[in-house]
Length: 200
Image 1 (cartoon, one colour):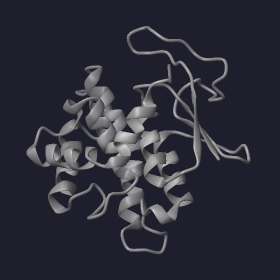
Image 2 (cartoon, helix red, strand yellow):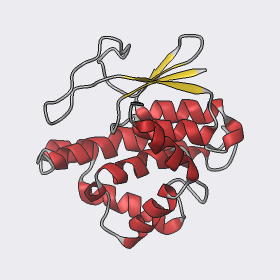
Image 3 (spheres, one colour):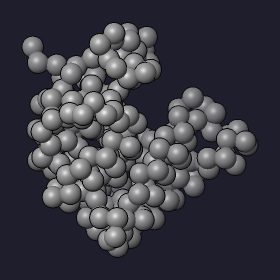
Image 4 (cartoon, one colour):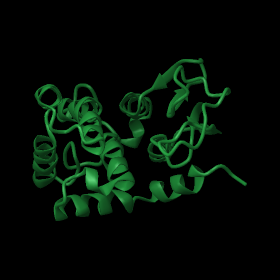
């Protein structure tokens, strides 16, 4: 049994989708978090050291946090779901690289753009800029149907989740629109959306 500490309409929403796709045995603990608009607050029952979400705990009490780490962990925990190439399988390198590219490049770059810091030379040199990020994403989706290859993987939860939350943070291109539509039509997402909000 896995426990997901989750706040509706946040980065943890895509983790519900991941767990549904994986066929995981899990439960959701709904917590509050501080929001960008000033609403919300840290929740004392949230075990995340910074009171953020997602935060996943397994039955042994081991915790995993950060979305990319959770995607890696869950996909490997449920190999029968086919959400990740095996460590010895072709495509594993590209898949793992996209998980970490998302965390190490995409997340910083879109925040620099959002907070109007994107023209800072030091940040561009360290993390790359929006143009380089867009070219990388477009190149991948021009080459195959999903971000890491011809099969849907856990890396797609990260990219699609960003596009669902803020479409303008991904390249403005029909290829991306088609990709987001393809991923968003998966039945597991519909199941996840029903669980996103705290039950009445």
